[in-house]
Image 1 (cartoon, rainbow, N blue to C red):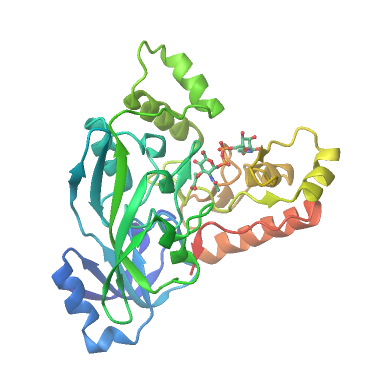
Image 2: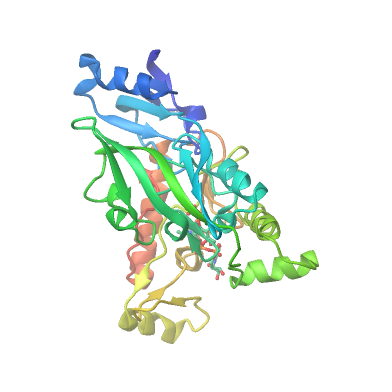
Length: 338
Ligand code: EPU
């Protein structure tokens, strides 16, 4: 078990910002995890669990221990005629897990292809894309409670999933380490292709008999066109959540902006793309030094090379301010800022 001091996190998070962790450890086994957690020196220090680092922004050096969780393994736990219960360790790369399921014809996560991050990070913010959320195929997870090192099981209800939300971002924030996630997948797919861009892409692919592989390919195609590859340009995907507007707020803005895109939810509230507000405020394609807003998607803040965490944070704050002034809308970051 090797613990590094003043360790550069540049290649350990997708924004690619030059920033250090006071201490850094990579965990590859449960034995290592227990040994580390019982070490008296590190007990009182702040801890940050890192997966692929695809949803974090470091605005300063991290004065604690960064724990990179690299627990691996995917296996079938049980199955019946219709479903298969598949367990994946927290350190598995999310897209590898999706491909593993698709190769075996197990449906449920194909719309979530190519989302950056690890399996363990996925339930934290209930990752979602193209009409599907992790919660739709989630069965349960195991997590270690930091206060007493007890292994706990959380079922669907326990996790309190919401739009980019779970209990691990709210009342249980920083209290658990997610170790593995169990998914309930379908042997007979229910295709979810109502999302406009998927339908259009599938039509262009000229498919005879639709399979989950095709849905995954369509999603990958759309994402690659719109979202910058973090290996080439530093970013963390959507920087803000899409705001949910009350009918009154929605009508006020819609009256003067009838082209505003929206999705009406069951409770009568309107989800409006944050990207639309940001674009309307003139930020799309903005660049100052190495810090910018992506030219193809206004919700993605980017580091073109040597931007700092505080540069990105300052830009995010300016965007929030201008959207607030122009539309009286509060944009909430989706990315975890440290
Ligand atoms: N739009 C603009 N300007 C832009 C981009 C988009 O006005 O620059 C408008 C367009 O009207 C477009 C609409 O926003 O039709 C929706 O855009 P998109 O389909 O890209 O979805 P999104 O709401 O911006 C969400 C997720 C993404 C996910 C996509 C696809 C959030 C915060 N983001 O983005 O997730 O890939 O839907 O389902 O909910 C991520 O979390 O990192 C992420 C990329």
